[in-house]
Amino acid sequence: MDTKLLIDFLSKLGEQVSSTGQEVFKIYIQQAYATGITDLVVSGVLFLGVCLFAFLAFKASKSEDDETQIWGVFFSLIVGTILMIVSIIFLTDGIKEIINPQYYALQDLISALKGAIK
Image (cartoon, rainbow, N blue to C red; front, side, top):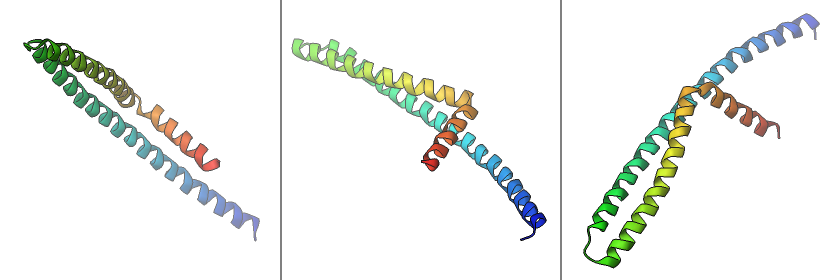
């Protein structure tokens, strides 16, 4: 095989891989945006659950039965607190992914390459 022909083939292949790599990175950035938006939506839904359990705790506190009042408030506050913590975690992750999607795209790309190498 002629050396010049091999060099031409490798340079054409390099150009094609370069343009493909840029497109793949753009797709990873769009995926990071989508993940961020999904995290924000999940955070909002969880916050609605927090509001529901806060309402149930308020309603249970007005109950005339002492046992219902104690357990209703206790259960509602425990579940509401857990939902609030999870909601805050999703909210912060979503905000970070929307503000800096390139970082998360690069992180995903590196982990994908590490998995392909192993």
